[in-house]
Image (cartoon, rainbow, N blue to C red; front, side, top):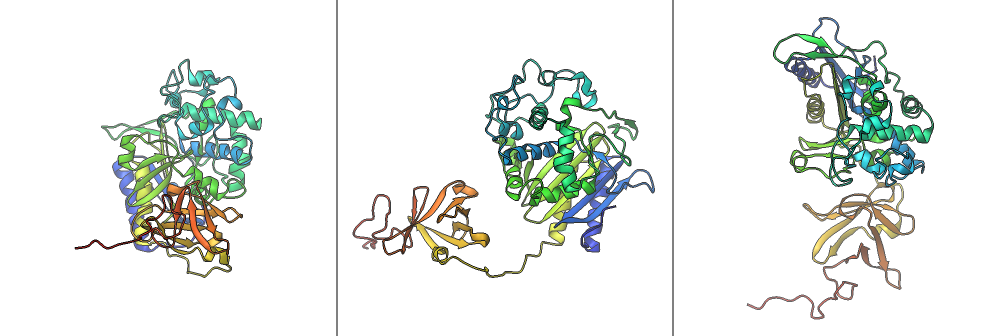
Length: 462
């Protein structure tokens, strides 16, 4: 049993229990287990079962299906961070001879490579991987359904390719690499390719009668990197903390942020639903908050992992039925329940320990033409440029160490901000991707593109 970090209010705990009890009863699943994470650890866990006195705990394994893809993506991002590959590299550069080699690593991670959603032949999730011993058996003779890079089309074979890429580069089986580079450093001792006792059995529940049938648990072979893993709510709670904050032993905070950032062009329906896909992670805007994570399903099992970085919360929900409870919805509801009942208490405001006076003089209001903006200093030497009030373009900038800053997000992501100075050293204006920001709107004598009318501002005669 995992030690709980902190304590939720009794009313919050009851609301969480009510939500999973409703999900288990209305979803007609043999069992359902859940956990909520706040900060660096689990603050609540609960379970419901059709067998009295045998509710699973956070140490019982369930199959997690496509949450496996997030683990595979972490391995690929490690290769990127080590400089072994670039996400823009074609697959052929590192894994030749697949017949899909023009697809880039990034496209495979984001499901934009145009590959088919499933393998040819019998349903791969319910048949042994020995039926597909080679990548050619996974891809088939016509692996593509769309031009590469044009649209988001979820592809299970695409993640089989990524797993084979990891094996080719590391020279070891995918699961061995995963255990050595991710599971062991993060302490995920109950996550594995094959079930380890105690584990739940997978069941199919008849849609029109309260009867059940056991589902087969196949070894997926080449398709393992797309959905093989078994895990627990305890392990996935620790994995959620890593995906929110990073861990220098595995991936830094910037790299897990890249995974949580939309990387695929969404379909119209996805835009309407507030859904997107990053690099091995699903992203959804729900209940006024952004949730990142992944869903998973294999015959007999459903899994959901949802993380709200802004709320410092995450939730895991696992069930052992082929269909029934909407576990990702339940996970999002668990996050919402805690966020609304016990909102995150912000850290105390503290002044900066030190400040560069050359940066401090840039703080305050600026004008792009007549549009007011304000530049603020943040911790760590970064700055933020955004609207004086209301909505508008807002971006954070990281210092480059040479008096310039590079945009991290928003409209100015990747753009360079620099302060232009007069011969006496005073600041003349800010230059941001050809946009000139001045201290006064259309300031006289400033380097405003197109110049400033010499007669200046004027009133309109009545």
